[in-house]
Image (cartoon, rainbow, N blue to C red; front, side, top):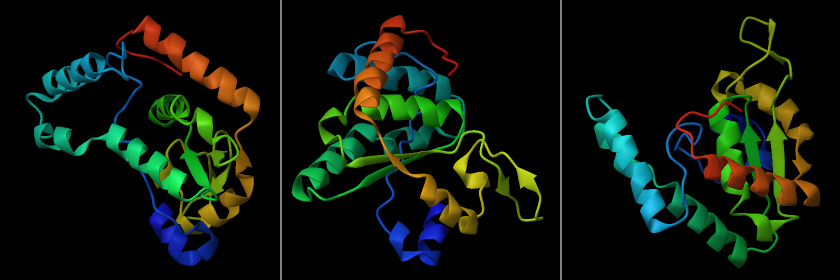
Length: 175
């Protein structure tokens, strides 16, 4: 949906980087260290063992996606990064995970948190989406006006919230 919205408005054009891991579940202890990251991958292997998704584990490399984003940001100091989030545990936990790695990019990061915002569906009815894929591409054109810079306070508080969540290291988190 976001890709189609880009086709409707040049101002939205840019590379889409998707955070695929669902940080709302699974172990998070030492998530940035090699052992913690490997423990998480092993947990996912166990969860997906008898599912049709076992071959998709290797396509999830969010650490590489963030590395490439940071590299591009270093190369292009004027680059603006927009974080689009729906009101769901996957998007919110991915935001916290990402924020803890973007502290040095204050001023370059915009957020669009589409919580409790009404949109119009394909039948013309008002609804409150929980995921971005539920929104029609033309509705993204209106939503882009709600982008706002992440504040300095958020850059201080949100990584602390993530750190606390990681230390709790519960298997399921509700945000």
